Length: 467
Image (cartoon, rainbow, N blue to C red):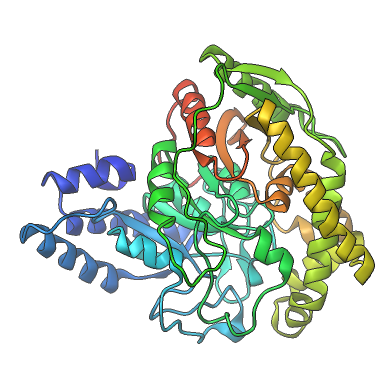
């Protein structure tokens, strides 16, 4: 087996035990990148020279007997919307192509501190605000499983790179499903961390600040091919940074819940249609967990439909006063059309309604925490429909269908909850899948359940891009 085919856990072990070097690992992954990336355009800035220099430094440190961090020598990618010293934080926008970061954002700094080696930057839509990873600056990313459908967004380059074997861990971020949707579309594992678990801000953007919805909902997390790698990446990413006032210094593993652990499954998500293949994936995941001793029941958490509405009321209003004017000025035509379609369907609200939405969000979060006391785990489809065809969102009707499909993704960000996307089953060329949710700071419960499902479904292995 070639080094690029290993997951991060095994590759780190091979390097640590001297069976491979960081240089060999980087050369193997770069070779894979050059072979498959032209077909999918997942990595839009290759950091070849930098990666080789980092690998030489890593091997020299190991030769001198230095203590080795957990991701020592492991090749990873970062998304184009996060600050990484020395490269642009262009966010897929032509006008930002020369915005060179002078320092790392906390999540990048944490990966660097953990010994990871950065081999490239992955694609996203303009301003990271579509389910399609396509922009005027870098072009379109294709799904390695089926190029006719989206690889997801906004971290679509990360999901596609992971599926195709370009690196073991791909950084992403999530405010509406931007980690979980690409993981689902590309058939890999994606962990949306809970509120404040991973410190996060861009030094290039701190002076302007962010809208309150983004402050509460946007998080960082990894794409991987194995659940154990998602756990490993989480531990690396979550290292503290006191510059982020939200960062929550809590243990990676919380107190054990009462046994047997009860799981609520929602195969059919209220508020619209659910594709039968996605509903079947949820029921199959429930069977896997039931076989491992979990108690599984079909039961709805409180007020799902109202939660979906609250996400839109808050986020559409934030976007209208902040991002939409910038999008109209410097965004590309498809991104503008996509956002226009969303704002025609889900209009911004007035100040009183906006304030009331935050009040209702708080009340809903309380009811969900009570629900999680009885059912520590909740499983829904990652998307309610199959991944849409490329560029479906530039018409209002197409965007309406996508928003209906996305409704299951919006609850975790609204309430600041973790969500783990894992593949379950298949439909044609694509994997179907589920998201596992739990209460805040309980990524460990999601990962434990994900490992049970993975053991039954089989570990994801890299694929060659489909044609």
